[in-house]
Length: 210
Ligand SMILES: CC(C)(COP(=O)(O)OP(=O)(O)OC[C@H]1O[C@@H](n2cnc3c(N)ncnc32)[C@H](O)[C@@H]1OP(=O)(O)O)[C@@H](O)C(=O)NCCC(=O)NCCS
Image (cartoon, rainbow, N blue to C red; front, side):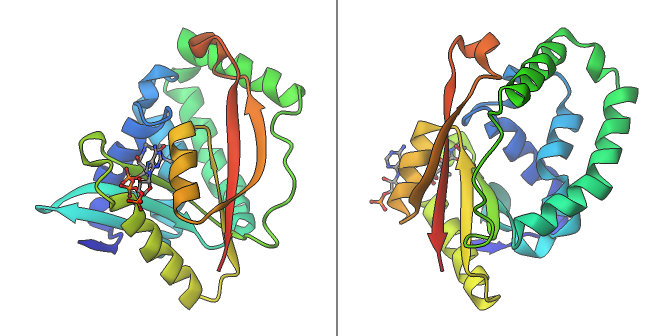
């Protein structure tokens, strides 16, 4: 069944997001430090806006989750004021900044930032909500993603939210969002995984009005 996220799902949701973070594969491909990367990908959603997230449960196990935010601007403010300082402290004290894999990523991220790769048009007026969606590998292509999206969109409509947007670097996920009636709003590229993939990868922003 699809149901609202509950506090008891926190660890399972974190594990799923971690395992899917590199275009559907585990985040260990690009980062050494499971807690730090899980915190940076999920902490806002699970701890500050848990009512906007949904999970798919099969046999009492979470097999997929959609972690959402009704308003990206609000979420970014909370991330900047509350989440980022604790992540920064964790990065300094956990030894993550001494690991070669993480240093290479960090240097590439800084270079991407200097090159202006993170500059995007403003989507948040027309499409204020955003989310991440991840399904365990063995449960993909069973319409679980479509069900989670339907539950989230109906929740957003009830809440009077005007639109939703999502960023993805996965070509496969891009086709999925298109199949869910999302429109391509923007396409760019990111270079910060070039030390792993030896090429730039596309970034797609998809949006849907509600
Ligand atoms: C992308 C993802 C969420 C899709 O969920 P899913 O449960 O596998 O997809 P569904 O079975 O619900 O697919 C729903 C529809 O989208 C289509 N679709 C899904 N993936 C597709 C793909 N790679 N190419 C073309 N169509 C696709 C399906 O054919 C289906 O169409 P239908 O309505 O005609 O049956 C899931 O595969 C996943 O978690 N991937 C890894 C993480 C990721 O990339 N997340 C997104 C970035 S935040």
